[in-house]
Length: 230
Ligand SMILES: [Zn+2]
Picture 1 (cartoon, protein in one colour):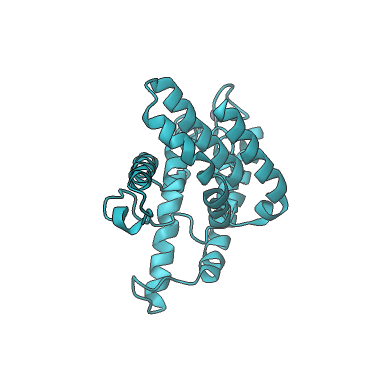
Picture 2 (tube, helix red, strand yellow; picture 1 turned 90 degrees about the vertical axis):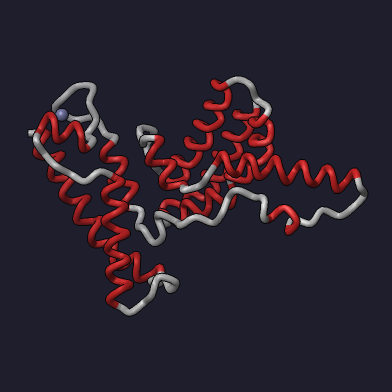
């Protein structure tokens, strides 16, 4: 019942934001999901802590991953490991933190005192993490979706890098390799323009740097697809 409500509310937000999300970069889509959908799960995380059934726990984890994929316009075949990497959030840590805050709020209420979040700040597990898709254009999502497409030559197989290598001797980068290549490109560019680690390359520059790289990759994937059709 909870999952139906969360799914419906997330779908309404996607419907309303579709024109914006359609043209947004990966990190804008991710930001929208974190601001509008992730907080919907706050109450469910607390219930999850008391949930004895592993199956139900997994269902809730699958649900947030599904909402994330929909916000990112990623296909349902996107592996959970990649989704976890793109979200880059410690969901179990968030769950523990929400429980701790709720518990401390209740204790403050019993003492008739005002709850001050700073008092529990040092006990919280979740720290700010790096955004792995900062400035990444949405062509990246198209590439990930391409890898989830069925192979036109082999029934029941997907066009992922492992299938292409084993069945067709074609080597392409995995999504994770692409992410790390892009990170290296951004680091190199930042170094060349004299930025130190604390000063990031402006988002606009990151987009301009990564867009031609990803579009070239997408073109070569389209070519591979055309060759497989022959
Ligand atoms: Zn194949």
